Length: 380
Ligand SMILES: NC(=O)c1ccc[n+]([C@@H]2O[C@H](COP(=O)([O-])OP(=O)(O)OC[C@H]3O[C@@H](n4cnc5c(N)ncnc54)[C@H](O)[C@@H]3O)[C@@H](O)[C@H]2O)c1
Figure 1 (tube, rainbow, N blue to C red):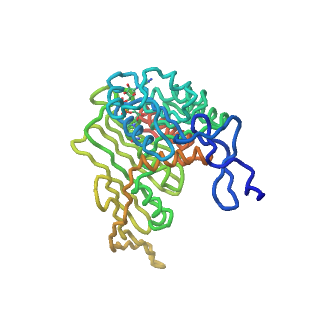
Figure 2 (figure 1 turned 90 degrees about the vertical axis):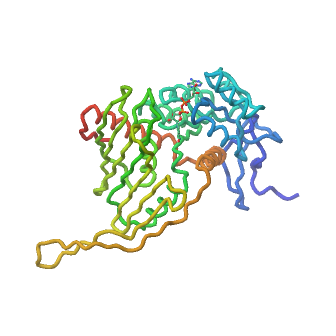
Figure 3 (figure 1 turned 60 degrees about the horizontal axis):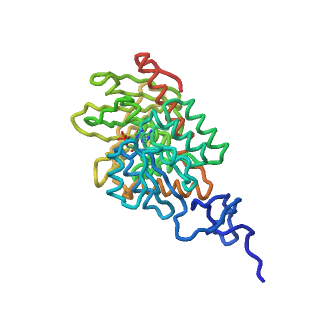
């Protein structure tokens, strides 16, 4: 009889709940195999991961649809406090279980992953309870209300060998992935600045200001794209309508003279989603509202020459070609949740893990402190 290539259980060995668990091993053939932890037995006809989603308001339906459509996960239950939200689930997915009882989701032995898609101030308690009950968690942005809460969740997940992914959706868009390629390939040269505008009329939030609502998108993109972490932030803003800042400007200072600016505003008459990135070699503009040619790369800039013996700097302007790279259009959440499932099944650390969520929360907290200090720079 031939010996098996590796003495571990094959991929088809899955947990009672349907989850593939255990550390991945690479067989000599190159394929991934999974060690069978205690109590595992094969279950046919089920997707690998069973997901419970908490919160079915504005964003929840996107999370439910995308988890449910993955090859290796399905949503088994949706929980919301509002019966009218659950009625919507029942209309869209007649076979899906719905409940107002959070405990039944958190304690269900058949659920592997809990997605927290509720307002920011509820994230910590819900994610903590999910982790305590042995569930991997997918948490909406921003991760938590304070950095101390984020640190506690990270520690808890590590202790229990569970994954946290924070929904930094934009990292999975074709545009951000393309800009990452351009920056990493040195196409733009050393970066001078990152300047971004995310403004529209509403949606007014009541529990967080415009920075906590809109800037996590930009800060998570910058965290992913830029070569260093910010050293300090200065933020100014104003409250006009409902007691929280509805317009704000953040300036972030990075090593090597890189500077970033984030403009967020719920009181703009038009929607603008534009980012400029300038470097020593080239510059780009990303307009996320464009259907085609979202990104334009400009071979423009300045050359500085010093003549020997002459005190003046000579600045000459370079104005070369513009080109628009191809940008992939697959739905970002689809890619993100596929990647999350892969991270769970193959024991990978997600790029948007709890640590990434914590870095963004630290920037947000520093921005709040700066707002209170009338724009004084706060070190991060
Ligand atoms: N990644 C993105 O692009 C993106 C976009 C929008 C919102 N979000 C994030 O998603 C989260 C939710 O935002 P939203 O706009 O969908 O909010 P929402 O208010 O529209 O929906 C939240 C839902 O959660 C339910 N809920 C609240 N607390 C609950 C609890 N304890 N148990 C059960 N249900 C509860 C509410 O009844 C509501 O239906 C926020 O963190 C927000 O920042 C992310």
